[in-house]
Image (cartoon, rainbow, N blue to C red; front, side, top):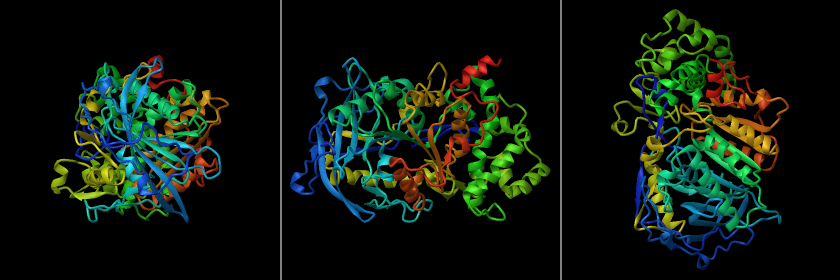
Amino acid sequence: MKERNQGLGRGSQRAIRQIGGIVLSMSALALSACGGDGTSSSTASVDASANHPFTDNTAYSTSAGANLQASQVNESAAVMHRQWTGGGKTVSYTSTTGHLTAIDPSGKAEASMSYVAYTAPSQDGKPRPVTFFYNGGPGSSSVWLRLGSFAPTRVATPDPLMTNWPNFPLVSNDESLIGTTDMVFIDPPGTGFSEAIAPNTNQTFWGADPDVRVMRDFIRRYIAVNNRASSPLYLYGESYGTPRTDMLALSVESAGVNLTGIVLQSSILNYFADPGETYAITNGNAANNALELKYTTDGMIGYFLGYAQVAAYFNQVSPAPTSNGQFALQIQNFVTAQYSQLATYAPTFFFAGSSLVPNPTFPDNNTLSQWSTQTNMSVASLNAYFGNDYYGTNLVPGSTIGRYDGRVILPSSDPRLQQDSDPSDILITQPFTNALATQLPNELGFEAPNATYATLNNDIIGAWDFSHAGQAVPDTIPDLLAALQLNPQLKVLSANGYHDLATPFFLTENQLARLQTVPGLNPNLQMTFYQGGHMIYLDNVARPQLRSDLVSFFANQPISNALSLAQLPAPWPDESPAGTPTLKTAVAAR
């Protein structure tokens, strides 16, 4: 997911995520062949004469009120045949770049949605899996996953370094999943080249629930057009794409589509668990203030475990941890033992400078010294987190650390920070934009001279209706539970970066642990952890590990070192049971 940070004083520098708009004008984007991906059942030719580039002259718009007339809808696509080599094998594959119409259950067209599909022929006569990928935001296209993770080519980033920025090459991806699964990367309405079809407008789908419906209908249409009903089906969401996945899994299953598994990468499954996020989304609505204050301790602790990993990376932990996992366990034990004491400072952490906390409370030097002894973290690093200044500019004096990846750093005087406050966002934005401009026409065979591809649509998050299940913001653990109860065979993989300061791993652990409250529930759930940030796959050590774990996941094999549901730390006592949305529990407890 790509999004931007905007905030409420000191506290929401750590919390609220808002999209920044990077809009790529393309006189090069289009789609050819006809509506589908050529299906994976036929052998793909690498003969260039079999390729079908396509120029789409439609003037797509991603503005809120825009829509296409039915006569403008074009399901032609660019179809290109190539080979990928990796891991000692060569795979012939087909890329299909174009639009497909999402159609609702009554048969009405909703949106013309742009996508890129990578498919390959089966080698054993069995249907190949199909995995649907999407980023988050809300307001992001799928370009970040497509150019960064497991497609046949990727942008080679030196994450967490800035070496040779912004000239990162597009390379063959040794860690591609094309040998394991077909992949479909989807742009929601108002992103990429996706546009609503009249009488709908793009904004019709800018909300948690309508977004899920149109994504469901795109997936159902793709399956039908490409005869993939017999294929194992997977969903892969990143960041806001993870609550979307929880809701979408339930919606797709309820519509009669049997899913095999879902991947939740860098999750925010319950917005109430991040009080600064909820406060910013609801514009400080007083109706939610008591609940936001209630969960400040859980939120502060959730961020702290990720921050501690970043502090260790910058040599603020002595002795240095022997492993990320062992250090995470040490800090987990610390916050569990000190939960009550930490609670004293949690409202200040999120809401100092607001009317919610007129008298901020900070730990004194003696307290910080005690915590330093218990955590091995320096007093300076603890003060940077719990003190009066934002840790992102206070952990390393004179420098700003990343939010997506806390290891990425720039001097605070760097002029690029005037436009984008997150060094880890700066790391990829221009390089990915550059790569997309050449990849679309040259590799994917697609041009759209009258359209502008929106990698991020800055208008969407401000207009987004986050409400879901009668609450102001989504708590999707009940959706995940319902999907698991509807389909007990559904596999779940939660992948997390230790250095992610946007959606920290310990918040995800505690939210998934709510499933422990359901008697008799024993889901096939695995949780994995990697060095790196929000976009785990950018790290050259983490990407091969994540790819290997995904191959095991697709093959129904246990993942080495993954945590099961039973192995997760118990949820905090103030958390709602898995089947009960957060707000409803809070109201009942009054």
